[in-house]
Image (cartoon, rainbow, N blue to C red; front, side, top):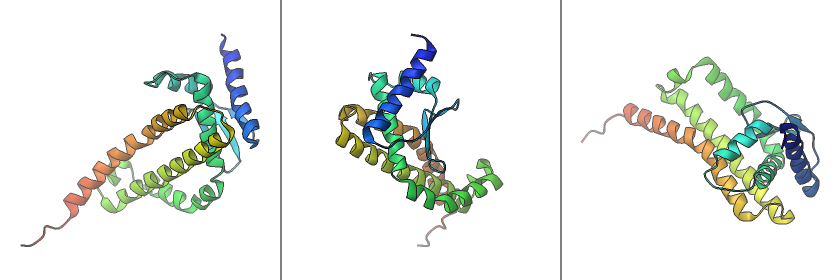
Length: 186
């Protein structure tokens, strides 16, 4: 199958999910390092067919490519259902962005007050991811687009991409807490 045909097929699967759940929104094909993304400011879903194909191949389990794309589409729609919370997070997200911009990781990872912002950023993003997956599971339960076991697998491996960096930073944070805590007098 040619690349253009496959890309059109991917776009068709995404549109099919949008139509089925009756949440129409624009789709944009983008060449980023991200499979799919929901832009809550402009209310559209972007997708990278090349990255979708690659990440599907990287899964350690065998599931259909169509179901993988559909599950990720439901996840992005899950973010759209949480749009108000995403809007509300803008001031805090911007504040964290400014701190990170002013202080490189190498500096933040040596200062517990600065590094706390990295942890808060991870926690906020993880809550958004979990919420989007809960919303996706609910949409899927209602519309029965993807086998629930496949939804669970895609959710698990998707969340793993967030937990790797988060766990690394939790270890750094723990080290900072231990080294900055005053010894207890006996």
